[in-house]
Length: 244
Image (cartoon, rainbow, N blue to C red):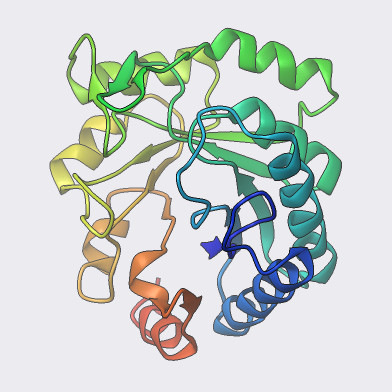
């Protein structure tokens, strides 16, 4: 994960140049540590908006483009929080990113402070085609942390639904940031034919065990110190994976 500092449009923003410098610095640390890819996300834009403001889309495009241009080996993706996968696709298309993550894709989900989310996987894929972004992969969370399913179903059924709706990979999370999914949850999500990724909670002590059950992981919390990627934390995690 590359957690971008507060972007323009929020009171605490230090400006677009600072955001770009911070993102590129995190990229350097992650690439030096040997990661395969990076996900650019506006984590610190609080409160998150359901639909991205124009200035957020513009800023994320600039930051993501800078990361794409500076990347030597890492595949670059992006996500605009809280729930605007069309905006994420637009940023990815214009910035040259290769994938997006969307927390909400197929299942009906809600949060008390926001109500039910407008989730339409078919419309999202139509939009991807419309803007010429068919080569941008959609990594979709299933039964994502923080939200409640309106019509509960077993995880394996959510996995099948998301795959049928066109997700290129499925993301399984624990109950909160920093919590890992269980082996049983990863196994439930497998079997659809789509790659399965861990979306939270991967740490050195559980990395080998959990990664034996899936295809990869998105790692944020365990690599962060003072809102930046920590080189020692990256080195420690990667040292536990060098034999895989």
